[in-house]
Image 1 (cartoon, rainbow, N blue to C red):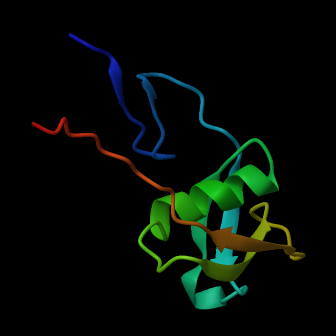
Image 2 (image 1 turned 180 degrees about the horizontal axis):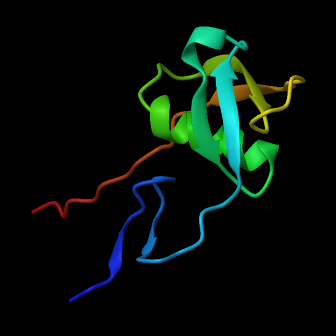
Amino acid sequence: MSNYTRCEKCGEFGDIGHKCAPEWEVAIDGEDYDIRKSFGCDAEVAVLKYMERFFAELDYPEEAEVWVRKPGDTEWQKFDVTVWAVPEFTVAKKE
C-alpha cells in the first residue's frame, strides 16, 4: 500500500506527513473578494502553483496580473503571468 497521496492542505502530491511549503494569499488583480491560498517556497512559486491549479484551462496565450502576499501582510507583490499552450505529439505507424 502506497503512502503517496494529495495533501488536503496544500494540494501537492507526496508522502503522507510531508511538510507543506509556506502559505501565501493570491488574487488576480488583487480582487479582495477572490483571495485564495497557495503554497510555495517564495512568492513566484506560489503564483505559478496558483495559476496551474485554478487557471489551467485558460485560452492560450492568456495574460494576467497576479498579486501575492504573506497572510497578515498588507502590501502585495505583483506579477505578470502569461499562460502558454504546450505542444503535445502523438505518433501512429502508417501501414
